[in-house]
Image (cartoon, rainbow, N blue to C red):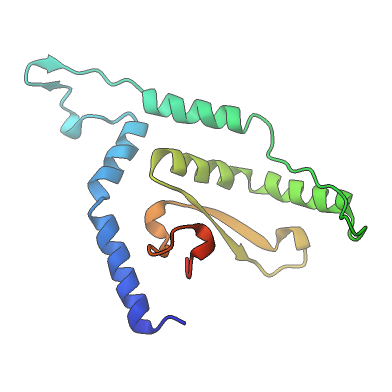
Length: 157
């Protein structure tokens, strides 16, 4: 169990890490948004510079090919004969269809920045297919266990 002091220290280290990379993240975003030049100066040292939307086209074409169809899974029957594979597949595919935009946003973030995340959260409601919400998060909004060498070893996220 983490103590409040440990949580405070982890948050401070996280903020310090991302504050030191703020300019780099802004530059990566500007490359994606084809805003290369600071202060709108396309001429620097007598050289005319031209913006080429390469990062945007690479990211968006990759997303277009990755999500050409709706994301879906195929579910096979349980080896013990329990459950209903057809119902499980229909539920999972309906959920993936519902959160498609968030999946695309998280993938876009992961392609532009060092990583991207999906936050899943429980939602109270009568419809069992709408009890989990999904949101795409940039890497600086997620605190991970920096001492873990894999996701399986994470003590906290």
